[in-house]
Image 1 (tube, one colour):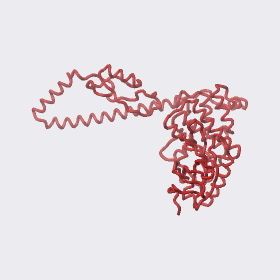
Image 2: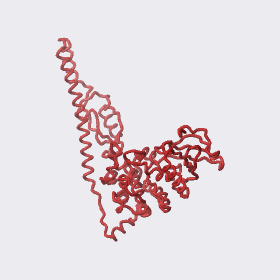
Image 3: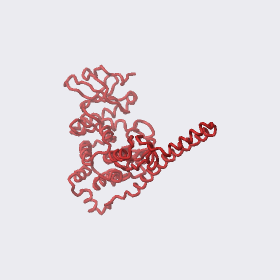
Image 4: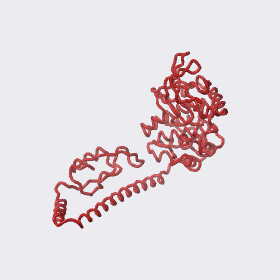
Length: 418
C-alpha cells in the first residue's frame, strides 16, 4: 500500500520531481514539483489513498481532469496533465504563488464592497468559461480560489469536483469543509447545474461583504438544513456600507429556488459591473419587463432588534457573573468576621473607615461606544488607565468600546486600570 504522505524526493514517470508538500485537503494532497522536461515548477494534486482504491472515482478523476485541461482562462488554474505512477493517481497543474481567498478574508474581515465586486467578477469569469464548456464546478468556495501577488484570482479544483461527487454526502465523506457554500439542491442530493455554482459564488460574495458566512452551526448537517430551509439575513443588514443594488445582486444569486436566481453567470456578472459603474441593474430592467416583483428597500429592523437583544443579554450575563463574585466575597468576609478577634474587628472597622474616606478612590466614568482613543483620554482625565481586549461585534463599530469592567459609577482607586 503506497503512502501519499511520503513522496518527497520521488520522481513521477521520470518527469516530475516532488519538492515539497504545499497543501492538504480531504480528497487530495498538493505538492510542489519540478517538470524536468519543460523546466518549470508545477503543482501536483494527488488523490488520497482511500480514493485510489475506488475504481469509479479514479476513472472519473481522469475523465474530469482531461476535460479541465481544455479549459484555458486567466481566472482558472490550468491543468497540464493527468497520469498514474505505480498506483499514484495525480494531475499536474499550474503553480500559483499566492494565498487562498479564504486566508485573505480571514485577515481582512469585511472587504470594501468595490473590492468584493471586483473579486467576484474575476471568479465568475473563470466559472463562466467552464460553463461554456459544460463543466460545472460544484465546489466553489474561497479555499478553492487562489490570489496571486498581482491580485489576480484563479479558480482551482475543476478536475476533482465531479470526480468525487458521489462521495460528498453531507452525512459522511468529504463535503464537510464545503457545507457553508453548498447550494440547497446539492444539500438535498438533487440535480445540480450551472445555477448551483452561481449560488455558491453568491455565498462567497456575501462572506466578503459581511466578514462571515450567511449560515453557521454546530455541525455540517444543521448548516446544510439552513441552506435548504432558511433565507439568509440580507447582507445590507449585516453591513450597512453595502449599496442596496449590490445587496439585491448578492441575495438574488443566493435565492433558495434555482428558478429565482440568476440563470446564467453572464447575467450575474452584468449586474456586478453595473453596480461598480453606478448604473441601473440589467436584471432589474428584465424583472420589470416580466412583471417580477422585487424589494426596493431592505427591512433590517427585525435583525437589528435581535442583535440589540443579544447585546443586552450578554451584558446581563456579565453583570450577573459579577454579582455572583461579589456575593461570594461577601459570604467569605462574613465568615472571617464571625471568627475574627476583637483586634481584627478593630482593624476591619478601621479599614472600612479608610476606604470610605480614601482620597485616592474615584467614580468610574461611562465608556460604552466611545472609540479607544476617546476612552483613553477620558480615563486619563479621571486619573485611571485602560486595558483593552478585542472581540468581534455586529452592532458596535470597530475600535469602539463594547463593554467595561468595572461598570460606570463604581468606585476604583486612581491609577488602576479599567
